[in-house]
Length: 421
Image (cartoon, rainbow, N blue to C red; front, top):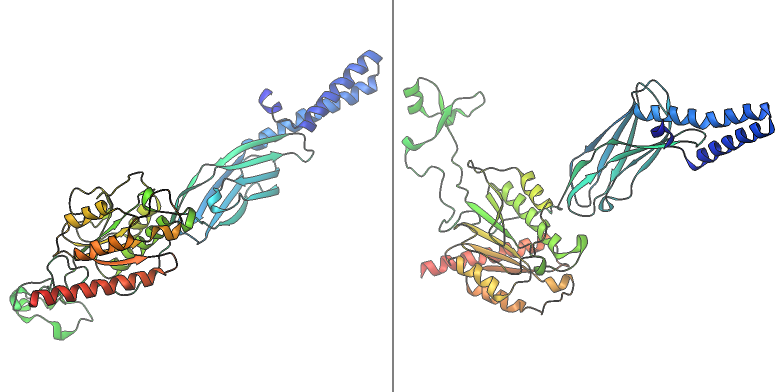
């Protein structure tokens, strides 16, 4: 009873106090009619409070998010199914779901009458403006009676996770010779052997071209076998993402860090669609996402890792070895000193394919650190044989990628010319 009475509103408490005062006056004045009225006035808020408390117990809700993974600037639909599991009719419900500020305002719904068997379906949309792992909920229900005498609040559903992934931009082309690793010219084949004995075959399937039948294997196995098309060998590409807080400028969705993360996601998915094996590492060499043993990975692994990535307080680039492990390296670097870039140069041999996108961080906003020599950084990397392009907020991502592809092609031609001499 004490728990039920705790839900009395100010109106209910005033009515209860008025009923008690009227009962006291009826005793003093010996007025039986006033006593009857006071009993009714006292019983009304108590009865309403008890019934509202019972109705609160018989509520159940479920939350579904579609899709659970949405890019920045996209939209996701949230469906709430609220139903009553009690025997008493439920009405006067105020449903409010907890939505972070980055997803929009908190939605509110008023349910005048809740069917006992079918329940009701509520829907609202969220429009994420900031990357990250967002939590929706808890879902709260405020139950009131028609007289406004009692009010109870209850959590109907716990939190649900919504993954806001970085925006992915469609890119075109790849750097010349990209994905082949150090020392490969693109002519390497999956089957290095020569002659028919080294052909890879498989059993014949309906619809296969009869011109691909491998008669020697067919004769040996007494089963029709066909040749498998040779595929170009695909090397690996390592994407290095500099996510130091000191290396980036700006705040919110327009910060240089968000641009770098979106660009890294776009490059990873673009190269993966071209059959490249992708490794995503940080400026300290920490592995975020890597291909499995069979050379495959799911694009969602890259997007989820970048969605949860937060800036690090580390001041400088700290590498103990080659972050690319001899493979092609594409570094996305913010504001970096000559010492930090020197680590990249020191651990990468001139024979390894190395490309860099240097962010013009001051173009995204002013910082407290002294300005860095952007031209000197570009000259340092180019002198070490790197292909370099500079990114600014007013240059579209696909243009930055196209410029990087051209620098990679020019570097490859220069290496071939040097080898010929």
